[in-house]
Image (cartoon, rainbow, N blue to C red; front, side, top):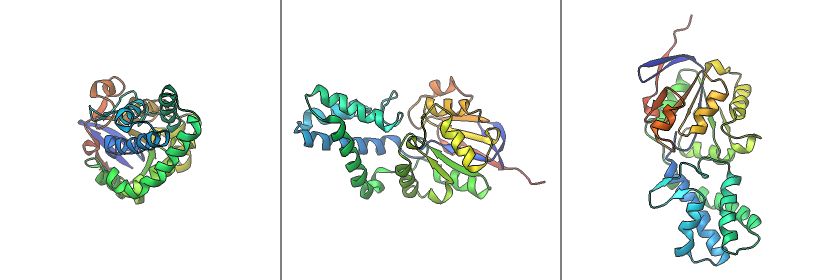
Length: 257
């Protein structure tokens, strides 16, 4: 058990830290821009669409602001479940007159998952302080979980490439629940699996849905980080605990006895 200091305030008695993945522990834009670019390129090639004309438009439809070098704050990628990202690609292709888009998009997304495994060392980059923080959490005897809208197996792969997998007790992706963020279902599942209570748990994430999920699960605190999707102003409207990145989370061991 530890006390957590954030912006001079102390959150006492924390046993479980739940982190979002993208934009919280790892670079959001690098990973998803790379993945979405692969998906868009393969879809263009399959349908014979001009890449110069359609690739960036497809990426935009799936949630990548290429000129701005960021993810769109409304998503869908990085914020909403994979099925919604796929549906955005399907809608764009339908407007281009393409056929059988559902099965083609599903297959292309799967192919990109497989092809990208050998490239993840180039796609995945930890954010400042992330590895040190999860290591310190485990050194203090606390539990670490990941709650992400990504697929569970993809998130586990990311933890491996971030050198965090040995510190993470459980990973829950959107494919493991009926209701994704901001529903508390991911956090309820994590608490049940690890035997932790909401009153000794803290949620850390970069999106409104992360912070709201922690609130909906009655966690002791929800911490918003400004290293991903949402602005400080947006996060501050939901929680008093807003920081630039996870390096600003400080732990104080609680003496036993």
